[in-house]
Length: 127
Image 1 (cartoon, rainbow, N blue to C red):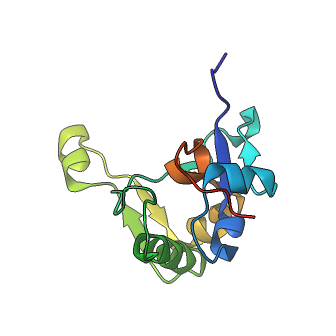
Image 2: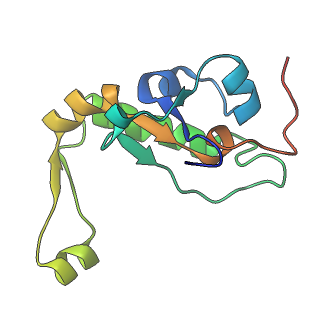
């Protein structure tokens, strides 16, 4: 039993957000979904560097870049994504995801991002 549920944001909802909001605000607004078994294999984990002490992306640069790449993938503007070359070398296998696959799967995927997936003790509540 997890100590705190895993909260996720559907990709289409992420693309509609004008800015990053903290977990407490997004949960209160009903934007987050608690992980369910049927989400297995549909979670994108976003790793990033915090650019501020109280907010991970004060100017919105990383969030804008994330939305840009997700939109490009959903619109089929990136022909394919392959596994990292070190993974290919070590495992003697290349994992490739085509543009057609991204277009179909991304609208059904959910994103784990620390600022909205985990309560933020120092986050100011936005009313």
